[in-house]
Every structure is written in structure tokens, then in C-alpha cells.
Image (cartoon, rainbow, N blue to C red):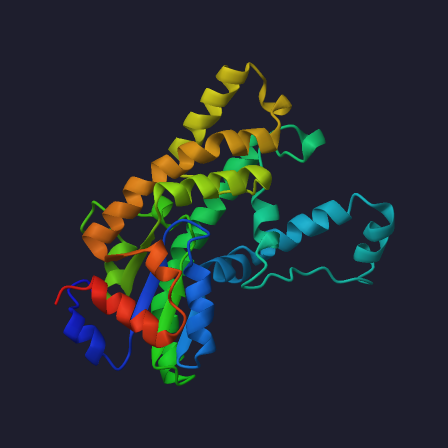
Length: 285
């Protein structure tokens, strides 16, 4: 797929793409639109993470909270109620809630080392879920009869790969079967994303060394202990640093393993035919 040309793409009977980049720039919008056309199978890496790989952790966390309530505890212990995660492509809140935010437990925070443990779980889940796309691309065609396949990757894919390593264990097999497509935003897109995040900060996945670095920096800068950190304040404070950290990795992923399309062009895509043309224009002739 890495060496695909425009001619190859236009002639391909089975088109396969993996969309990656910052959240909010059109990955899921494109995937939903393509699926709606009836010929594209939509594989959501985040959904796979939250069901196949993190589902038990998520439900156990629900149960842990329920066990603190005497009424619910009695019902759980007698198997009178059933607790499950209702995660969906459009609602990934159960996964975000499990990841949590580090800091003051009185403000909804969790201990930092517990946070790191959950981050490690997410890392392993993301790697596995991304590689599962290879299996689903074949299954979508052979079992369900979809000619084309779109993988809506997690926004944190860049945190679990090394795009400068030609033998990267995730990017190499992925790009051999599926065309990675970076949706590149502008500086204005970044500012809009930061502003939106500030209003509603959500749990994020970080590469562990980066996470430990910004955590130590925050504690020193704010002069607070780990158990007194405002979880939302830390998440907001670190978000800009996270974006700045991710952008060069996204760029290297596109340059070394795939192609780039601009978010402004993505916003104009209304049909699968528009999408075909967008990808063709980004490929070498």
C-alpha cells in the first residue's frame, strides 16, 4: 500500500485506508459517511479497544464503584443486577471514564501510579486493536461482502509507534495491507481543538515517559502534592504540550508510511466518490 500510485488506487477493486490524526478533524465523519454508502466496512479502533481489550477492566471499575453503595452491593452479590458497558462508535465515554485523570480523589482523580497502570493497559490494547484491523479488512470482504475497508484509528496511535523505524511492528504490517492517511489540520484547527478541550477536558492516553515528564513539571510548577492536583487543571495544562508532542510524529507517519490530506479538503467530502478523488489526488501519479 505504501507504494500505491493514483492509477493503482483508481483501479483497485478493494480499497483499504487507515485514517489517523488529531480528534475532531474528520476521521469518524469520513468513516460514517463511507459506511453509509453501503460499500465500505467501518472498523473503529477505539471501539475495539473498549470492547475486546478493555471491556473487562471497564466493567470491573463500574462494579468497584457500585460495591461502595450498600444497596447496589447487595444486589451485585446476589446476582440480582447486571452491570455492562454500553460503549458505541459514537459514545466512547466508558473507555474515557476508565482511563480517568490523576489527582485529588475528592475531585474525581485517581492515584498517579494507578493512572499509569491504566495507561499501560491502553497501550497494549491499542497496539492489538490496530493490528486487528488487518484481520477485519479480510473478514469484511470474505464474510460480509464489503469491497472496501476504512480503519478509524485512535487519536493516540502516534503514541504507540515509531515512524522512524522501518521495522516498526505496528506500522510495517499495517501499511503493507492498508493505506495510512493523515488528516492534517492547520494552526487554526489546533487552536480550535485546544479551546474545545479546555471547555470539556477528557481523559487522554500519553506515552509514559512524556506523561511522567509533564506530571513532574506540573507538580513543581504548581507547588502541589500528587493527591492535591486538580485533575481537570492538569489535563488542560498538559494538552497543548501533548499536541506539540504528537504533530511531528503524525507528520513522520505520513511521510514514511502513507499520505497526507488536508482537513479543509476532508470537510468538503460528501460522498464516497468525493473520498476516492481526495485520496487519488494525494497519491503520486
